[in-house]
Image (tube, rainbow, N blue to C red; front, top):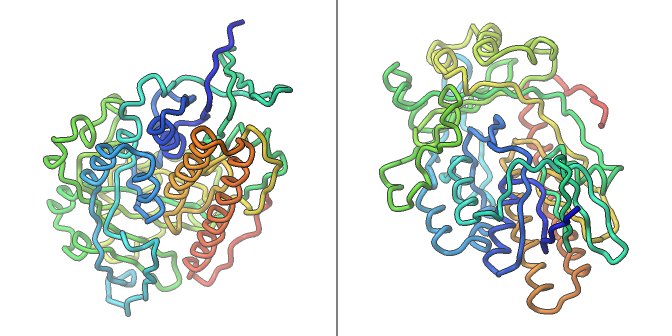
Length: 415
């Protein structure tokens, strides 16, 4: 059996893994990204990513200047102004919104599809889809053998698990890792701004962020994502319709259309038992939600009723338990693989990008400036844990603060 060699093998082609590959490529460090799926069509991929300072800092560090310019040029806009209403669309006193360093770019949002186009640009055969990782083994001399589902094996100096919340790398590296079901069930959906305008939806919904605080019910957030495809022409395929999603029905993965989106979360069992929700398609989930909020003002119900069903799905909100430790070696982790978090502060994707920037810097120190490799990985892991575990905690706290219906979250066992 022929075993190919790569200096840094990255398992998982999400934002963190691709950003790491870009950063290493920028510094001439050999790397390859091994991705199980040929097309990334997970549900979250169809939404926009709210940009935070840590994400911007990381992208500027890892991308060549022309691709960072493409990122800045294709960033969408979301409203900054915010109003708070009840379920009858009556104005309520506005809730204070803290603006820290992470929140100074609240008007910026990027389609995850467009971001992926940027992060894949110029990687060529560095990106290797259709490679399902199965396990690794550390050799006596300290290198790592990565085994894949097709029987192929790759030897690497460093193996990075960037393979998401269900990470196969993490299962082997940190068998004591725990994540848990928070008990919250999230629904979200989209309608194009053009369709919203045709339906005569309230201008207040189209022009600003709306936070719905119903009496005795669950909150709903509504916001716009505005893109200008005509402004993207100078970046080639970046920001244009992505051929990867051409055969998928609906508009969920359309990254060239401005839209209004909403999201809400309910405690497990409130809308329906999980066993029922898990069998529902987008249209059925919309009906279940409408049946629960049918007493809301028609201005709000129209938004839900006319959302594209292809953009609607159920997400069980999970979180990791911060604090996992392991002995530093040639295998490490980044992003959701080690610090998966709730979506309530929009830090997940940004934290993965930030990890990529941290690890790029440490591997550059090792490959270009003589820093011992294990020391570089150790320092990365300490910095990653510090910011990543804090993001997990703050995201959980934000979720708990959002639970305003006077009903406590159920106790759900860690898994």
